[in-house]
Structure formats: C-alpha cells, structure tokens
Image (cartoon, rainbow over all chains, first blue to last red; front, side):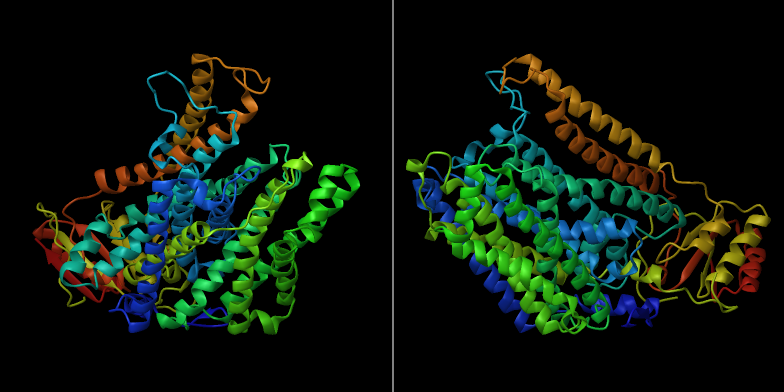
Length: 445
Length: 178
C-alpha cells in the first residue's frame, strides 16, 4: 500500500487485502493460539488453588499486602493506554499514520483492560463477594466509601472498559459490513448480524462520523484520567515512595510508553503472519518509535525527579526508600526498571534503530519487562520499608504469582489472536477515506 | 455491479432507480442534478464518508451532538447526586472529611459523564440510523467495496427519465427496482 506514507492501493485492493487476513489460519497461528490457551489454563489452575487455600500462596505477609497482582493490574491497565492514545487522541490531532495501526491497538486496549479487571478481583481474596465494591442497596443500607481511591478505580476501570469496547465495536461496524459483503455461508450470517444493518448510506455516515468524533473527544480525557486515578491509589496514601504529586503525569506517560511497547511486540510479528507488510510499513514503525522515545524520555525525567525530590525534600523516609530502591534488597528490580525504560528507549534517537524491526522488537520486549518492574518496584519496594524499621520485610514472588501472571498473558494473547483472525485488524473504512476516490475529470476536490 | 449475492432486503421494498458510479465527481454531479429537479429523498451509498458527496447532498449537522451533551450532563449529575445522596443516607465521617466531600466525588462524576456521554451517543446513532433509517431501499454489495451507489425512489412512469439523467451524469450501471 505505502511507500513512505503514500498510499498506492485502490479501495478494492484495501477490501481484498484486509479480507485476506481472515483466511483459514496458518499452522504458526494455531501454535500461537494453543500456547496462549495453555498459559491461560496455567492461570486458571493457579486461581483454583488460590480459591481453595487463600492468598497465602501469593506470599502476602506483613507489611506487604499489595504485590504481584496489583503490579500486574497496573501493568495491564497501562498497556491499554497506547490504544486509546493512537485511536482517539491521534484521531483528534488528525495524524494520518494512525489509520493502519489503530484497530489493532484499540483491540489491544480492550483485551488489556479486560485482563487488568481480573486482578483486583483475584487480589481481594474472597472473589465471590467482589460485588461489594459496587454501590448496590445491600441489606444493611451501607454504601461504598466514595472518598476511597479504590472505589474511584472501580468507576474508572469499568468506564474505561465500557467506553473502549464501545469505541472498538462502533468503529468495526462499517468494516464488518464490508466483510459481510464478501463472505459466504455461515460466516456471512455472523457478519451480517455483527454489521447491525450497516449499508454505508449518506444518513448513516452523517451520524456515524459525528458520533465517532465525539467518542474520540470523550475517550481522550478518559484515558488521561484512568491512569491518573490508578496512580492516586498510591499517591493519596502516605507510604514513602508513593506520596508524590508527580504520580499522575508520571503514570500516564509510563502507561502510554508501556502500551506502545506492547503494540510493537504484537504488530511486528502479526503483520508478517497476516501478510500485511505493505499496509503497516516503516513509516508507521518510525512514528510509533518516536512516540516511544517521547514517552520514554518523560519517564527518564520522572525517574530523575523522584530521586531529586526525595533528596531535596529532606524527608528521611523518602530518602531511605529511594536509597533502598537503588542499593537495597530490591536493587535488581530498581536497576532493571531504570535500564529498560530510561536508557534503552534513548536508542530510538537513531533513525536506523527506529526503522529496523528486529531492534524495535527487542526494544519492545525490554519495555514490557521494564514497565512491569517499574510497578513492582513502586509497590513492593515501597511497602517493604514503611515507617517502622522493625516491621520491614521482603517479599519474593511465588509460584502462585508467576502462575497468575502467565495466565494473564495467555488470556490476553488468546483474545487478541482470536480477534485478529475474525475481525479486520486494519481499519478498512478509514484507509479508504485516506485514498482519494477516482475522479472522471481528474485532480482533487 | 458485483456478482455476489445481494444482502437480503427488508420485506417492503421501495420502488426506484439504483445507479452505480466509479467516479466521485460524477456521483456528486448526479446528486446535484437530481436535487435541482426537486428529488431530495435520495439514498447515497459509499464505502467511506466523502466530503464532495456530503456537500452535494447539503445535509445539516447530525443531531447526535445534542444527545452527547445530554448524556454527559446526565452522567455528571448522576455522579454527584449518587455520591452525595449515598454519603448522607448513612453519614460516616471518614478521615475527618465532610460527609459530602466534593473533591473526591469529582472523580466519580467525571467517569459517569464520560460513560453516559459515550453510551447515549452510540444509542443516538442507532436511533437515527436504524430506527429512523430508511427501510426497503435496495442495496448492492459493491457499495461497501469501491462503488458509489445512488438510489432514487420513483414510480415506473418516471423511471426512464431518472435513468437517463443518471447515465448522463456518468453512472456505469442503472437498474429499476420494483
């Protein structure tokens, strides 16, 4: 399709190529899907042990009662943010390069938030009463404490999941209609139902285009709010290392950074597997890498500022926490976070690195690892040395932590792979919108 | 038009002429010519929204925006209303804060503003496009691929005149749908 950012395909080519991605799966795809399902089953098995015996398996002990599950919750919420940035914020900024990649990132957002939503439920221990978090009229007429950031989280995450799912499904409707018109047999019937009567009439486009704009405008502040709210889970407490005003922008930048890392990890192999290299080109990767560099640099600054504030505040508890992050029992996690996030991203100043897919893929893996460790460091290392030194303790992840973590990757991967093979992973309608329609008299309108 | 089996049309069909165009300027010319003749009840199909067609059709701005506003304001009011009412329904002092403490409730109100704003926007599109949408209008699968379609509701008597007008404008294929 593109050489640089010039689209050379016709409308018919776009439909044909995207419909082609829905052809019967290759052996590689099936193996990947089986791998994801296997990981998911490991997670299910671990979860059954947690239900049977309790959270002791996860190593929860004083003073650390937030550990790998909350770490992974924040990690997956963060992953979702790049999807909304690319689909909604870049839509408002009219960035044309987003069109080829936004569908896959939007799907990633929905599945990442679906994954994240499981973790607070796993973490609470008695999962069968998770609905106590919701404001419902119970027998004692008690209501949730709306001053608690944990309740803000319930509203933020459930709104984010609902709105991002709505945004994804809404954008899919015209594309599903295009597939319906090419499909045959039972698949045609399924796509016909999913297309909800879409025919691309002038009236439908008139309402759709306007609504899409408003959905993007609503999703933009939402994405900024969600990770701010997640950051306030920590920042409104008085735990050293958490109680910082920088947390909201720091978390939002980190979320977008980690999300783009995951986008790269997913898209680089996917474009080859689905044979859409001509649609997602170096031009798109170069732009994704620039966004990674920008957010990575913001993180670099935030890391530096955290240490500076700890030193400059003269607060001995803050100073101790940050000293121990670098040289205490969690030094390995602290340095993994700094090297993977702050330093590795700086390689993207070089255009050769930005347009080399092997190096981008390796960097994206570093980002995924680094961002998981960032949350681990913030949560576990801060809790391990609270205000009373005799209560200090360390926690190391257990098999139950790794099992659930692996299960979350399996759950996420399974949904993403199923989506990629059954729905258009590249937005047909928006790419067509970018291609000038043929004109009898030539020229442009 | 494509040889693929057409999408099953709703039971009651509207009679009229269905034309297929490859060129967008030709389709826009046809729309302008039809509108000049007083034929306003056209249905135009395309695979993606197009400004030239929108200009020729001279549609107003979609009323969906009003519903977005209503949804957002309802969500905001619900957010503040729910938190304040529930706090006062079982008054408990938490952290020395007032029973009804506005700053933390802004978060809930904000989230509900976005939630209801988005959901009511989509509901409005469904209402205007499906519930109030035209029914029984013929369609061809090539319109979701690379063709532009124009359907002109008309009787068999004046169909020939409309067909001729569409062909003159540059339609590749024109057929009367009874």
